[in-house]
Structure formats: structure tokens, C-alpha cells
Image 1 (tube, rainbow, N blue to C red):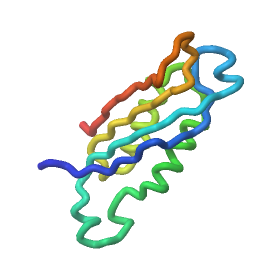
Image 2: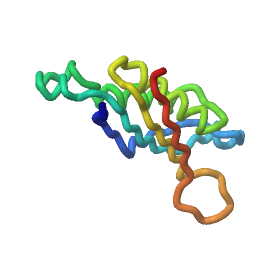
Image 3: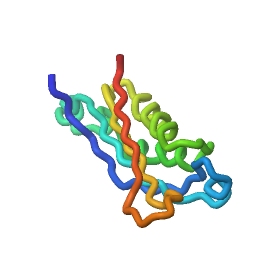
Image 4: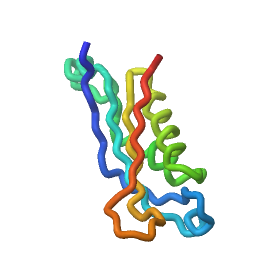
Length: 121
């Protein structure tokens, strides 16, 4: 069965992640995109927000993780964010992209991002 999707893109949150001391001290903005795969038929039938993932609450939970305990790698951050998405048992899979547009790279660039996909066993 093909799954439906809920997509949240461009969630911008200040965090203190990185391998360098100045990244942890000064912080920087991270941009988060998530795609949740789940069956949305129950929500469509009931027209009740309790039958789906409340994306406002999801955004708040993701923001808490990004603003919370620092990690060295955005790979680790993405993994933690996927765990937040999969905490809702209705979510069968989650794709998470963590963008680090202010990464300490000594060349002009538009973005650095890591994307992971996690699914239920």
C-alpha cells in the first residue's frame, strides 16, 4: 500500500551544533525539512486533527531538539530528529534533512545538508 505524506519544510531554529568551539559558543541557524509517511485516510474520513500528526506540535518538538543539547555532527542531529518523527506510532517512515547554511567553509556556497530516512522495522 502506498503511504501518504506530511511535509514540513524550512523550519529555522538556532542551535549550537558543530565540531568547532566557536560553533558551540556562538550558535547558528539550522533549517529542518521532514517528510512523514503514514496513512492519512483516518484523518481524511474524520476531519479530526487527533487522527493525524499535528504539524504544529511536531514543529515544536523538532525545534526543542535543535535548540537543545549540542552534537558535533548534523548526521547525529538528523538521527535524533527522525526519532522525534517516529515517536508517533502512525508514522511508518520519516525523511529528515538538516541544512547548515552557515557551515564554517572557507569558500562561497549555498548550503550544506544531510538527509536520512528511517522507517519502522
